[in-house]
Image (tube, rainbow, N blue to C red; front, top):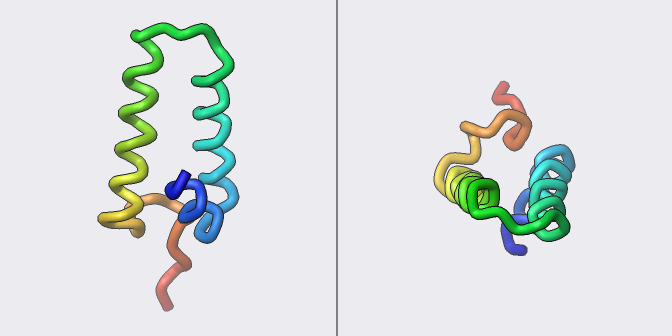
Length: 64
C-alpha cells in the first residue's frame, strides 16, 4: 500500500498499472505459476522506485 501512495504522487499511469495487476491477482483464481512472478515483479518495481526512480519512465519530471 505504501507503494500506491508513492506512485500516486509521482504518476497516475504507473499507479493504475500496478493497481490493475494487484486487482487481477486478487480476483483471478490462484495459480502459483502466475502469482509468484507477478508478486516478484510488483515487489521489484517497488524496490526500483525506492532505489532509482529515474529508471522508471514517467516517474520523474524531465531535467532541464
